Amino acid sequence: MATPRTRSAAQVLVPRFAVRAPDVQVEEVAGARAKDEFIRFQLDHYAGDEHFVPPIVAERREFLDPKQNPFFADAKAAFFLARRHGKVVGRIAAIVDARYNRFHGTHDGFVGLFESQNDPGLASALFEAALAWLKREGMKRCIGPVSLAFHHEVGLQVTGHERFPAMMMPYNPTFYGVLFEANGFTKLKDLYSYEVQAIEGVPEKVRRLAERVKASGRVTVRRIDLDHPEADISKMQGIFHTMLKPGFGFAPVSHAEFMSIVNRLRPLVLLRPELSLFAEVDGEVVGFSITVPDTHVAQREAGGYLFPFGLAKMLWKARSIVRLRGLMFGIKDGWRRRGIDALLASETFRQAVALGYQGGELGWAMEDDTLVNRMLQATGGKHVKTFRVYERPL
Image 1 (cartoon, one colour):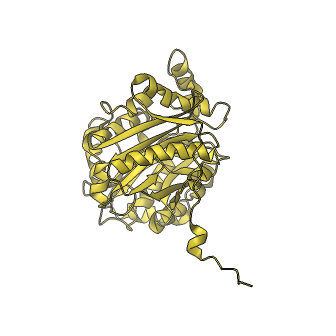
Image 2 (cartoon, rainbow, N blue to C red):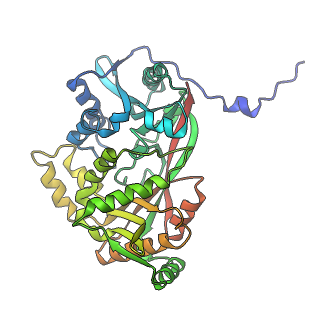
Image 3 (tube, one colour):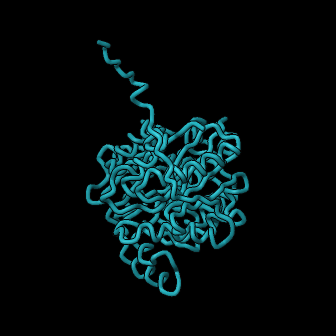
């Protein structure tokens, strides 16, 4: 009698591939009407989900328009809709970011803006179309979801669904991970977000370190210069680029694209300029921290449309915002591990409490970035959500 073969670890990890649903037709989006179907499907798909925050349709049109979004100056994308019996049941985008590939020395394509019913065969049809397009573009590996780049929304949310989503972070049904894994995708990296509570105060160790740095007399903290914001924005971009390293994640962005991101955030920064802070040494900016009110709870009231009543509903709800979102943080090369982060965190915390905010969400941080995770934990952050990035060879 033959002895049963023991499966190796490699065999156990071989992914399954779902069978493509035969009754699903996938078409590449062409024209304004189909682009609107692509955008609006998300609103229908999440109908009744109390945690879903509908995107503003007008903003999504601009975001996906190559003529209006400077991201597309060095990137391209194709958008696909899946239909079953004529009804839209899923969507996906395939993205090639030339700047990312030059910086990292890769041939990576991306999938993003993924939405699907709970059907691995339907997801298979979507992935088939997107991955075929990436292969035609010469890509060797697919990473996702990334919508559209790492400075936009990244990953699938895999834990923390019981919490309300923070602005500029992904939110999706719990079954999306199964759809990716059933179609040949395996985990590439997890990203963490952290929660801080104002009532708990700044940890004593952070407070003492911040006081020592401040007492040195060399480091000062100021808020963003509202009279000359362009100078501060330029310094932020410069520090951001010094922090980039080839391997995984962010890549340099053009000045036009950086400004487009800043302009989307400008109203929130102007609302609470006390929370956009710069650390200086002898007049030189060595670090920055940008924190804004988390407007997701207000945006949800608009239902995806600013007019005729959405904007008024948003503004009314915005009066009761008590949470913040830590969006951007950077320390210049040569000044890390010198307590600049503690000083910025302590001052942000002090200002937030004085303004009446109760807490907020920070992140994301890569699971293997020990320095950043320790920093967020040291400032009182508790890991509350995990977002997963997948990969699949092409």
